[in-house]
View 1 (spheres, rainbow, N blue to C red):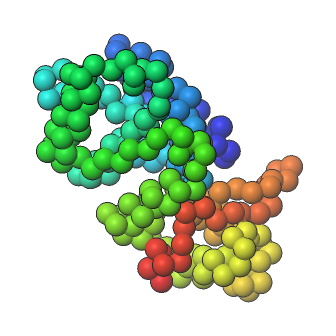
View 2 (cartoon, rainbow, N blue to C red):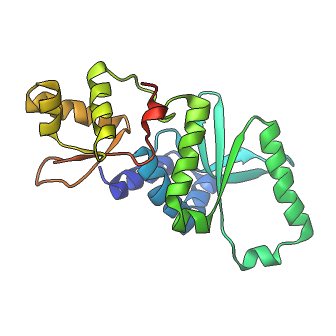
Length: 225
């Protein structure tokens, strides 16, 4: 599916599970900067939103409630992702509020969170740099590409090796030639890799995807083969 469709389904699924302040925060707090990050950084890198939570509620160190722009939750691993804009509100912030921001971050770390912060300017103007940083993080903490937990078959590995050597784009006929198999099996293998997040769809025909594009952040050294 396209970014727009997947993104909208993702937000709808989180909205359906929330009520009260948590729902209001998602509706009002998830704005342009967060969407830009989702579209220009996260989606090109991973092609899905599994385990990523928008406007994630946490307990404040002063027994209140606060919200992270994004939280990646995988088992016991918790990553807070914050998008920081540079604007008039920073000039109006008090010394107490400034200190409170860093104390909040310190307590997150003490509670076992990892934290990545991106400026809005980098997200909007240098998205590939942000994608690379996320990819390195995933490789460091999860191994391989990090976001792709499902095991690869030997045929899927052959497909990835091939596309990494080429220009990052592959078609059904390429797989059929590589593996000496029928088009239908080739299409199923590519669709499996699409679902696992290794590919995103390229140009589509009237009914079927005609080519598959490697997720931008994936590098051969990160795949472990």
